[in-house]
Image (cartoon, rainbow, N blue to C red; front, side, top):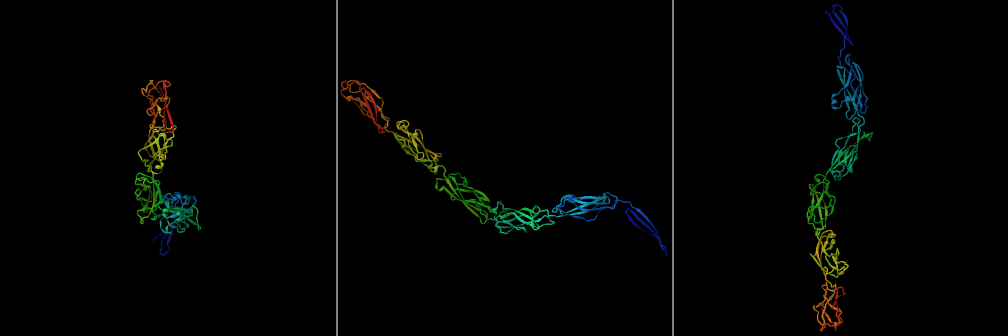
Length: 607
């Protein structure tokens, strides 16, 4: 029989023990068997990777865990090879590192024990956790013996804790028509607890609610209209209302009241305009005035007219026009949107206060929408009073005036009255006219500056000197002025001639007070003739001559008109009818003056 062999192999650590058996067959008998033990010593080589033990690795950590806390224990690695470097475990996550969420910065692997065949370590928290940002971190743990590597994953689940306020979801804007009925749903407010691991219920409330237009359901967050809306009542012309909404977490059924349970946000509601407002004037009636004859285009002063249509868009477009039968005014602008200041300007510069029909105008201003249906409108009245201007000059009834006055007129004697007219009213017209007299000698007269009555002025020596005296100044050429606006306005001047009427107010005066002549005895006449002469400056007086004294025996006679003295005795003069060879005659000039007194002028004649 052929021989056979077999072996048994056992490895104990680094030694392999073998048993070699040889056996042959013996026909008809028992086989022959030979066993030989063999021991083989194996020299180790680093040909195995390190292996993580006691997997899987996972843990849960509350998000408010303090930094430095060991969040995982029991990283175990074994390597069957004796040869090789000391085992090392590191964290690596390239993909998350690139995304900015590398867990290797939040966690640190702390080595507790390490040899070439065994590793033991823990994981420590180095950065704070936030469940709302990331609630699962996966650390890739890489074990190496210097040549071979193996890896596993440590999953760190972040446990949510109640440390975040609620957050609002979705849009916080709504739109509603201003004529929508009460109770119209504007929007639904949604908020949730940001602590998603253990979320609390949230309730809602309005913090600010302008004009109390809205109601907010605290449970379902439905915002509805609470009263009729009026876009035009808003301060914001765009119709936007800002609301402040508060969301509160329920803590044991009670709304929270701190920063970790309360969140506020601004919501906006746009009230869409409905054409429910007519263009409206800021006043129903206006009053103003303008001085007559204004230039074309002059705006009416102090009108302060504003028209507003508080609707928006085409609903707020309107036109402006006047109902003015006189055509004296125009309005600007003729169209506007929303709001505009309104001017009314003069279109007729010939407005004349002196025309009674032009002293007051009542204008109707109409503001009417342009493109709405129906076209809403409103009106206002403007009363325009035309004020008088000093545009007329005083006017006399004549181009010039004459008057007469006696030179003996006493002070206060009325010489004449001259007045003027003026088409203007008030002080610009006749009420404000002041009269004035000027020119050489005007001081001899006095004018009442309001009535125009001209009288003789007071003078210390009436009839002589600088007073009225026909013989000194028979005619006065003066200027008579009328000035309106109490002497500050327009003026008109006319000539005034005052003639002084002569009065017999001056006694005659001999040209000489002494006359001396000679006559021969027996002569019957003087040769040359003897004539006494006198002059009277009063042209209205008549001079008469009388012999007052010295006409002894009436030898002489005097012509009462010419003043010629003649010898009456036909025999002439001789020593028989005269007492002396010298005769003195006194000639008298009795005069009745306008002063109702007799004045005498005497001249002496010696023969």
